[in-house]
Amino acid sequence: MTRSLVLDLFCCAGGAGTGYHRAGFDVHGVDIADRPNYPYPMHRGDALEHLARLITTGEIRRYAMVHASPPCQAKCTLTVGTNASRGWGGAHVDLVAPTRELLLQTGLPYVLEQPNGRAKIRKDLTLCGEMFGLAVIRHRNFELGGWTTARPAHLTHRGRVSGWRHGQKHTGPYVAAYGNGGGKPSVPELQRAMGITWTDVREELTEAIPPAYSQWIGEAFLAARTDTLPFSGAVAV
Image (cartoon, rainbow, N blue to C red; front, top):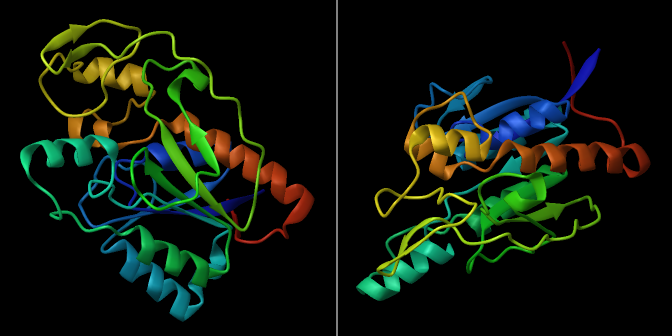
């Protein structure tokens, strides 16, 4: 039996990687931080340096697809708003453009993920927790390189995110999967809401995308490849 390989750049604790694994892929992660909770083989180091080396050596051809979630603090809606209100700005490096440049050099299909905000990516897909029955909204946008799929309908939200915002306490069917304080959920509540059980580190939970998102993307990619793309990047298991 063979399973295609996905390279999971900026992998954090494996929210995206787990979704791809559930969709039928083997997964290799890359992250500059030590991620002992990452459930798959992982290289610790700079993600872009590692990707450049894989391209130079030709090892990139082992992979069927690359997923990249570069740090988003420079352009995400929450950070931009907070920075502006406090007179901050420019403290975070925007890695979207250099990441895309290398992704294009691979010649492979890719997925480039960012949250809502000012990040300069094509929004080929926008996924939301409500689409998967999760207790988070957690909008995420995805640029698809080298392949396409139909956009799913964005379902109407059933209410507000619970917690304090601008001095007012709100209740609703969703938890706030970011930050600390202000009525933020407990770690067990975050785990249940995100569908992530293998890490209990708050920072990893708040940075992750729900595995349901990347499972949907992985399954859509496999369906699209059956029709349009050659089979590559397979490894025996």
